[in-house]
Image (cartoon, rainbow, N blue to C red):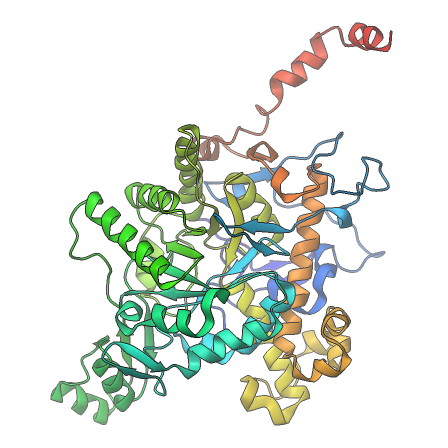
Length: 557
């Protein structure tokens, strides 16, 4: 098993817990006082692209030994001449071909195109209480930056204030809050996506959303996610709430209706209950059955009036992956998110996370292979997003390149929640009256924040950019977590622009698999990305052995 380093002296980062390949701790706490790379990037922004203490240090890479198959074992190819995808109005001169001019806008969709300023989207932020607590920061930050955010499953079902009668939602205040919070700052870039599972389907979420919001919302069908192979879970510590969820039709474990369980709760030996969602398609036995059921669901959503539909699938085996790609393509849906193992969660069985499913890079490599098969048959392939343990700008580049030209977005879950946590904690200290409202966890600023300043405009590198966008008077309504989200997104965007400029690709659609090389033979075998010294080797030998001078002379004459 690969062990990732807990600290990076060059960037001045330290992980509180055990780091994963993403650079995030395996357990990411809302009250964390730092200082992983994503945490610091939410404060310092693009400064985190460079080694610390300029003028006093030199730095050298430690990442030259690549073991096993992972995104870390893909390297990005650089080129020493040329420029592709130069944005309109610019030339191929060195004055125009600079990294700030790299266009990283993207779009996805079948008939209706949805635009995003950066090729990012959030993972599904559903019924876990941490998503609920930090939604304002998450949604406002995503809307200001201009990328899609996903309202995950079960939001209506667990809402005590929601009113559901005979399978029809009459009132859904938490779902309404989530949608309207995003739409308040939506400016045409990004999207609000609402996910729907078995219970949501029964509860009439699709009908409620289309009646109230029309085509402002993308409806997402859910097959699964990378973190688990069963439905979503939350944990509650109140017997009354557990009974309420049981009555709402959920699986609650242990069963709160059993007298012996209630006695154990009263005695204190049982302190919490886990609410589970149901598995989908349990009554189906063949691929043909699933095809028919999926197509029927898509037709029904279209009959309701949905013009944009997406699908989220998890790290099932190759059969499930092929089904997702083909069915989504034939149905003409707008986006397929493929979430590999390594993807995060608000709550999943831990050993299930550790042992089930297909790791992201393997799943994503096969997704490209299968999409290409359909494309070569002349079929239109659904636009895709790759997710599962991705957090940095190099991950964005690699995922887009590995799946090019089919992948339009990179899905990040936990990485995009960190700025919401961090900003809320800062806001709770600097605005004590808001501490409870924003779910701040700190009583004072930690040293890693104080070294930057004691005012928000000193602490967040993106503060004045957000102020420019919303106006000085509106800043009082912008959560610090949203400012932190902007700051992190700016760092990711600048880092992606730099990597693309180095690959001589000045617009996102020009990124290709040729921009990657494999750092070991095992990665080459699994991804079909050429080994690092085999890539361009034939062209290199031609330069060495061909009559280059004669060809140049002939061309000149």
